[in-house]
Length: 419
Image 1 (tube, rainbow, N blue to C red):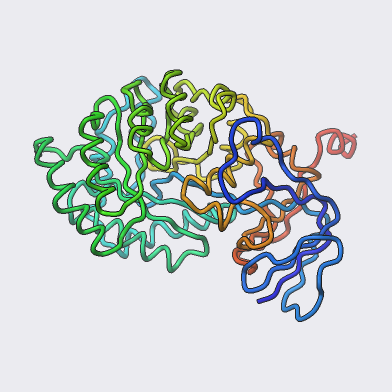
Image 2 (cartoon, rainbow, N blue to C red):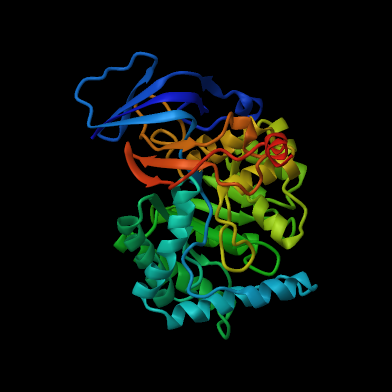
């Protein structure tokens, strides 16, 4: 399909085929009055006078702000049951632990693959309607060969059924199953789970929860070395609950990303920068847990390529909207709106090793595009909690069109109408 989007108020994007570091994260391209032409899902022309020949679909943006599709590089979106009682108990002072993961594992064990897919599809639809066109989904609530395989097969089905791009990650090392010795479970991960994931091509990445009360750095290193030997790319849940040296380990292993990093020290951040590891920050989790936020401002100042994600999961963060994550990054982590947008698009794509294909609006990249009902992109954190998405395109095709959408009223204008 050949598509043209015209009458764009602002086209706002980071630029490049790779991650953007430090101060360069603020360098967005902002173009006014341009059009975008895509052919067979790929952007082929951006400018004021694009080729009008052989067009299948013409979209009048009606002065919308156009951004790249948002990329969410850290979620646990496939689960069987919600955990609101645990959530409410934690708000009353109960500490966070692995018990919630065990609860989710029991629910997954009782559910079928079909039930997991049917439960996840509406969640992914909500993400899509909020502008997320690419999402990473981890397993991790199986805690057994059967359970992890079931989750990854459900994720495979979602890759076919959902209107967004889905990237699967194996997270068998999320917690230790009850009644199983640590060494025995690690052996199961290495000798049974990872070979199954490789043979059946169930995941692109392997992740480990490296933190206090979960997997030690030594255990994490052992598992991730085995995963790398099987051809999987590496990620870490690192230093969320305590500074256990997860950032340094991610650097040693040259992982694609280290995620969370709420407690990481200065040395750990510098090691990430030296090794080229992407810090994926999850401000929604800090918000819901009442924890300190990751030191995003310091990371940018140290020339790190910060990315953002929701950590959408049933236990600690049921936030699916990247707009809320972007706003929290600006309001609570001292990122500029330009840095936050880069972190939620191009750098988030780099955290999934997809930045040569998506994450920015440039010729040669996939036409994953958002039309936003805003006067300008700097209103995004200002209208906190508001979903500005009018239309979502993936590969040049409309996959969501909001009915009856309009720009939010400015308070001054609304007040004048009431007087």
